[in-house]
Amino acid sequence: MTVFAWLLVGLAEALVAVGRGAPLAPLVLLVGAWGGVGAIVRRWPSLSSPWIPVFLQIFGAALVQLGLHGVAAILAAEGALVGLVGGVWLLRRWPRVGLLFVLPATFAGAQMRQIRPVLRWPDPVEEGRKGVGPRVILLTIDTLRADVGRSLPTYNLVAQSGRSGPARALSPWTVPSLGTLLTGQDAYVHGAVIRAPKAGKTRIGSLSVPTLARRFREAGWSTAAFVENPFIAPERGFQDGFSVWDHRELRRPPRSLLLDPFGLALDLRPLVPSGRDTDERVDSALRWLIAQEGPLFLWVHLLGPHLPYYHADYAEGTALGDMLGPDGQTRLTPEELRRGTLRWTPQLRQELKEAYRQEALRADQAMGRLVAAAGSDAIVLYTSDHGEEFGDHGGWEHGHSLYDELLQVPLAFRAPALAPGSWTGPATLLDVAPTLLALAGLPTEGLPGTDLRREAPPRRLLLANTLYDAELDGMLEWPLKYTRSLDYSMQRMVDLSVDPREEHDLCPERAGDCARAAEWLQGRAAELGETPEGVVDAAVRALGYRE
Image (cartoon, rainbow, N blue to C red; front, side, top):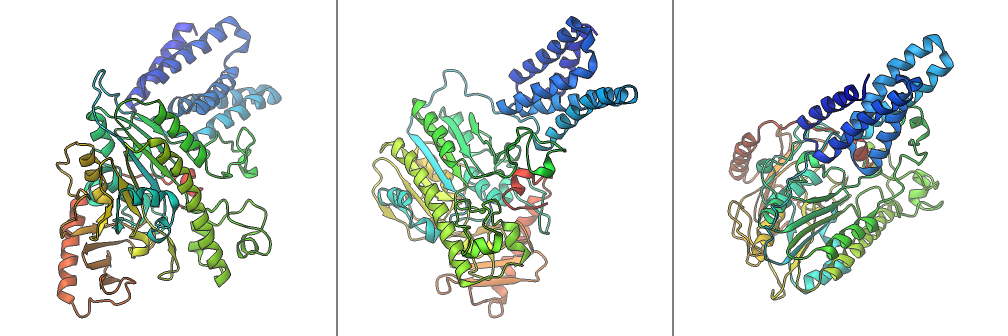
């Protein structure tokens, strides 16, 4: 084949990639790579095609390290195909030589298991379209329940210099909850929900409405996100509106079928993440923040106290160490909790709560560096996506119920010239978007939430949806809270003003109110319809969630 022919091959693959939404710059590299292959083969004909997969493997691995995963995936697939075909042919004639090509091809193909599809990046802000306004910084810590969050130093720094009060998430797990926070719409409007009513559900929708970041970017704000949770994925719409998206996940190395059984990647580093890169993520956010001029919207989301607890004491003699082994490799995950095989003791419960608090404190301290760098003239809002259960209602972790230990979250914000104070009515994550936009002087039309500088009016709120076990939804019309399973095997109504622990079910004595709430929920659920399928991938499984 001539170099021109190789370039045509590269161009054909580039056109396929364009159809999948690939950005232009990596495609130029892709075409150039194929041209390079052609030049090498033409200059040294003796190399012939069996060497192509080796070149592609090295080049593809380099692109993985550079973050060009879409191109790397194409190259890895091509390397596997050519290498396997050529290697099998060589195996029949010269087995030892053929083996040299089959193995690299296997490595290349195995990379596909850990490489994301080509991503669709947002368009840049129009040239010269720079807005005028304040810096807006949104800080969220994953899995931070209200009682622990309100005891953290950085949270209190924001609360004491601004406004704070009782607040709730409207969903007990990350995707629908952060979808509400970033769009100002409830879960059945923004669509990033999971619908299959079974454990380990994988059918996750994506955001179908504009995000808060898009509103800021279209008004001329620079926008950036630095996030850790692998659920917050671009293919679910969370990248919409962010010009900079830093989402280096829990270690996604090129993997090998041969090294997987040993728990190693191609670079011989362990596949199981050794910890979180909280400081690195905050350092990256700080570098971006300091380098910006003019108005900006920055979102930083840290996993913090989400299981596994990497800094817990697993030494011999501790309940955690005796249960899981003190080797420093095994970590307590949500999956371990859900199996129901753990022997709960007062010591184990206390160690879990303390490990959780310490992880929350580490994340809060990292957020403190951002608050300090932001300065007093920045708008800062600090909150969480959901809480965590520690046996409050007989369960552990999150995603499985709509009790308040999973819905109550810390929420505080400060802004220039904002008098310190608090609100008394129940705020929700639905109110974050209109509050930040109003503080920045931008319009809030189309958003049902409330600017938290004033008290929220009486309203009816949708609670949805659970991640595993029976699928639940609910309605909150303060102070009444109604929850049900979709098959009505469970339905409850409580009055939170007199029963904050949600112990007394009112449905037997207020059957009419429960029926009206259920009818309203049926109508809301009908609005949602079907959601596209998503996949709980390896990075999510690393947190303990299973398919």
